[in-house]
Amino acid sequence: MEKMLYLVWKADTDSEADFAGRLLGPLARRILDAGARRLRIAVADEDVAPAARLRLEASRPLPAGLVSIWADTAVRRRPFEEALAAAVARTAGYLVTESEPIVNTRHAVADGQRTPGMCQVAILRKPPRLSYESWLEIWLGSHTQIAIDTQSTFGYRQNVIVRPLTYAAPPYDAIVEEHFPAEAMTDQAVFYNAVGDDAKRKANRKAMNDSIARFIDFDKIDVVPMSEYTMRS
Image 1 (cartoon, one colour):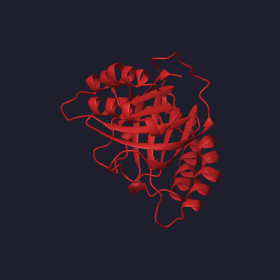
Image 2 (image 1 turned 120 degrees about the horizontal axis):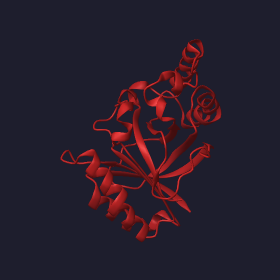
Image 3 (image 1 turned 90 degrees about the vertical axis):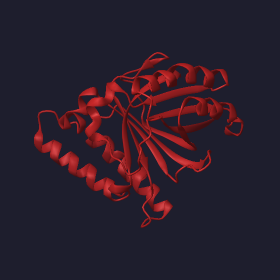
Image 4 (image 1 turned 180 degrees about the vertical axis):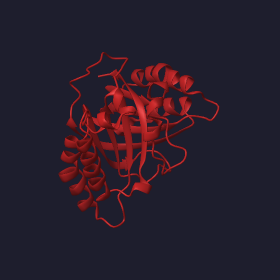
């Protein structure tokens, strides 16, 4: 089975509510009817509006959603992409390998339901100063544990891009999905797992930022808070 990720953009005339409704309704049904084994949809909506300050924009406009599709083979992906093309203004699709350092067991939800909190979607590009092998080793071999130790994440997925699937897809290298409690959208102490301890909050934030700087250029990363829905688990 293969995992495909599609970043999706809404039209300027779409409201957040209309766009989310189309993704979670007609689009989800078409993708499942086309044979997807699993389907997860994340969308930037009103539920994550308090996290606006966490957005980072290296690319403009930022995507408004992320569609994760599992199928027997990416070779027969055309029906999925036709469904996407009918529902969104633009797509960028990638075949990925998924690693899940933190499996969400805290907030298991039924199919069709929203995962509590916020799903922070980060789109990564390898800095030219690093070889691909060095970049992966820093990120996966070293940074991963620092991220786990310094943040309040209850779910953490690392998607390394194998190859683009759609024409003119931006040359991204990875997409990260991190689940945070709802309070982390507005409270740094919660975000950095340091409630009631400001010294720990500052230390965790510094450790996280110092680690990120080793393998990401801060002006080349996109971060979008989203709501995640498991449509078929």
